Length: 307
Image (cartoon, rainbow, N blue to C red):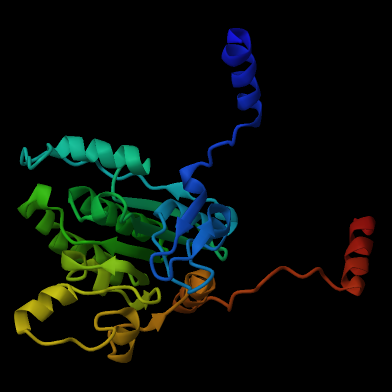
């Protein structure tokens, strides 16, 4: 009996036991509670297939969807002082940075890249809200300056995707200094006559909204994105009044003249290509290359044979 209970029964149970399902196969939509399969969600650019709610998406995944063939080159960003103030709350600032880097796999809260989008060379900068809330620190300021300098050097448009909770408190006044620094970087683009397009994603708040996020030649937002300086809850507590429905959301700001477009994420690439080509005085984009007519192919073949 010991041999049967100690060896045979565990062996049989291991063959027929139920396998554990990984935790990351399904994601619940925070808006409608629909369970979404991870591949379906990734193919839909992190947009709920049931209610069209736009979930967070990393800059790297966004750039893979925007650039031609998903190919882009990262632009090098100067490294700032790792812990300029020696800040500590419940954890030391370097420890929080290491935890965020391990969680996201990224160096910092902004990724800068360049490549072809609709055959037009562009420089893009994207904030990652999953990295310490996309907070604006010295690295983010350096990244925007590096992106603007690269765009001026290449004489191409710059597109910025904002997603932030505001300035990074662990860097204090140094984080607030990025507001005038990034404003000067945007001015470099304007003096060079280059388009600067901003795509505001959920959420864009605080000092980011008060600086580079609202200085674009064209302001686009994703549906239902929260765009504000102070949040609606803070405003309600201050003025002690109920705010209008959808206050500080993308559609509300569009109706009140703060935005130019509200564009679905799946249409964002085509929208940006059309705007970029229009602002750079190029011909309208084409969906695909069509083969030459049969008569032209025969004439070209004859010319090749004679030469």
